[in-house]
Image (cartoon, rainbow, N blue to C red; front, side, top):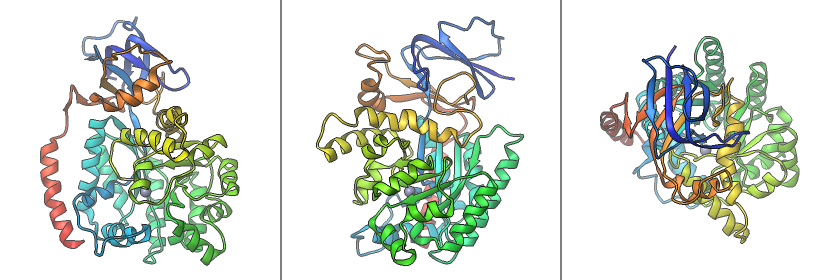
Length: 445
Ligand SMILES: [Zn+2]
C-alpha cells in the first residue's frame, strides 16, 4: 500500500459534485482517490507518504482524449504521395492508407511511446486509440499496450477492421484476441488498459465482417470505436453497395449501443440522430481534424440538443486535447453565426462528456476527482488573476487553464511528471530513437 498527498492547491473536482476548493488536498491510496477536501487530511499519515506541494496551482482530473491515432506519429513532416490530395478520399489514398500499410512492429512502438509522453506533459491521462496497420495487424495491439504500460499512461485500444485489402477477418481476429486477453488480465490487474472492437469506417467494411464483428462484440459485452460519415463518401458508397447509410448498417447489425462511439458524424439525418439517441450511442467530435481535411462541420449543437452525449478527441492532430476545446468554441460560433453558442458546450464536451463516455470502458470512474475514482490527477500551474469559483471556472478554463503549463501528472496513482520533470522516461533518448525509426519508415512509405 502506498499513499500520495497533493496539498495546498485549488482543488477542481468536476463531475457531479463540481466543487472548487481553495487550499485543498487530494489523498491517493495506491491507484484510487481515497479522499479530498479543504486543508489537510484528518488522519495521521505515515512518514513514507509521498507529498506534492501544489501551492499557487490547481489540482484537477487529468484530461481524456476520446479519439486518437497513435500510428499517425510518423506522418509528421512526411511527403504524401503526389499530386496533392484534393479531397478526403485522396487524403486517405495518398497519406493514411499507404502509411498504415507500411507500419511494422518498431514503427508502432515508437509511434505510441512518443505521443504517450506528450500526453503526460499536456495533462492527458487517458487515450482512446483507434489503431490501423493493414500490413501488420496480428499482435499490433500488444505493442501499443506495451508502450502505454512502459510510460504508465491509461488507454483503451481498438483496431479499425477494414476490408479495403480483404483483411477484415484478420482485423476482427486481432480485436477478439486482444479483448479476450485484456478482459482476463483485468480480473487481476490494475486496469490501466481496456479494449473494445473497432472498424475503420463502414464504407470499407463488408457485411460479413460487420455481422461477425457484431456477434463477437456482443458475446464479449464490448462496443465499437468507428469513424462515421467523416466525408460524404461514407454514405455515398454505403448507399451504393448496401442501400443503407453507415449508421443504418451499424444499427441493423446491432453494433450501436451504450459502449459504442461514433467518430465525426458530420453527415447525419434526423432519423440517424434518433437511432443514435435511442441506442445510447456516443459521438466524438474532432473539430481540428475536420477543418484540416475540409470535410465539413458536424452538427454538434443539434446532437446535444437531442440529448446525445458528444465527447471530444483529436483524431491524431495532437496528443493534447486543449487546442480542440478552443477550436470547437470558435468553430461553432462562426458556423452558427451566433456568438452566444458553444462557450459552455465546448467545455462540456471535454470536461463532462468525455468522462461519461470513457468511464463506460473502465470499472471505476475516470475524468472526475471523486472518492473511489482512479487516481488520474494533474497539477496545473495556474494562479487565477480574477475571482475563481464554480461560476467563473469555465471562463478560466477556456481562456487561461487551456494555455497554462501542466506541472505534475499522476496516472493510476503513479507520479509520472513532477514539477515539469518526467520521472521515469528519458524523452530525448526516445525522440532520438524515434527519428531513427521514422527515417527508416519513410523509405518504406
Ligand atoms: Zn480518426
